[in-house]
Image 1 (tube, rainbow, N blue to C red):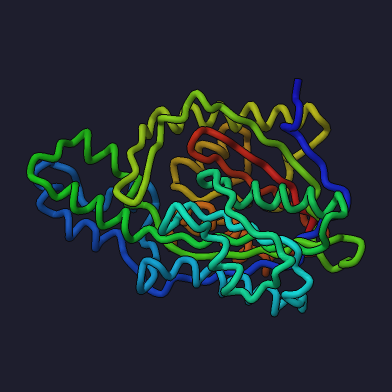
Image 2: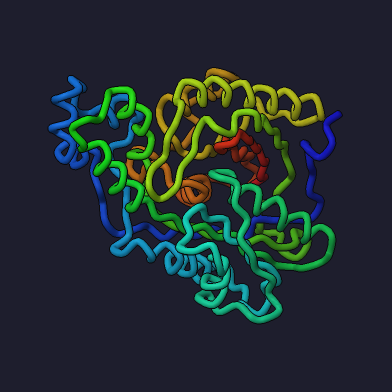
Length: 341
């Protein structure tokens, strides 16, 4: 019945992580100032983004196209910090939602920017906000199979264009309260980049073992959150309710297959909002003190959110700590992956 929804890795380690922080801070208060006329007309209070979502600020690049150079910088950084030469990398997966064109792939410019060699396979893998975790799973499976030794997973996201399009649309005099709330989530998005390096655990005892996890799909919900550079339109109530049902199903599926995640040292989640985080914690009875948060300062950085959060949490982790990476992506899909530090 479970098929491939639960999986285990035998010889894969997370060797390093890197974050590139987009340089321009954009506060939620600045959005309120730009939308002051709309908020007054619709009788909506200022401070909703911070009060309801918990997002005080987010970051943007100096230029929207900098997301790919940010991802390349993150890739170069993690190679330098781990001491692995670019020639040793056999695979690079770009998991960004953001893209400039349909062709070529975003991966090719990042591959070139990192300085990877012709033998390093590269491609885009997109699955909304779950892309990075899915990329890690695919790369880990290829390492386990013996096809390659080292793999880079990268993501670079730009949210500035959807922010500007959304603010322009919400500033129209005919905008309704329902339309405003339907696009509310667009203003929680942020920009940034991250990279992770995976390799064989038997060659790297200093690495962090990627043990495996679970995935689950509820794709009948594929119209609850739909977005592009022009905007993101969300049924917030439906997304939350169906997402929590999916997370709970996946959690119990994993525990029925021998996993036990009830007492992890850290639960590193895709970063969305206070409501999302607290709802997951309540649904599966997690200690919120063990859930690191970056969305208050960075917003929702799409697929890069989870690895950025893990990068920032890593300094506090000790050998033997157990970490569960958790996420829900539009569509709906969920994934949970355990890492032994």
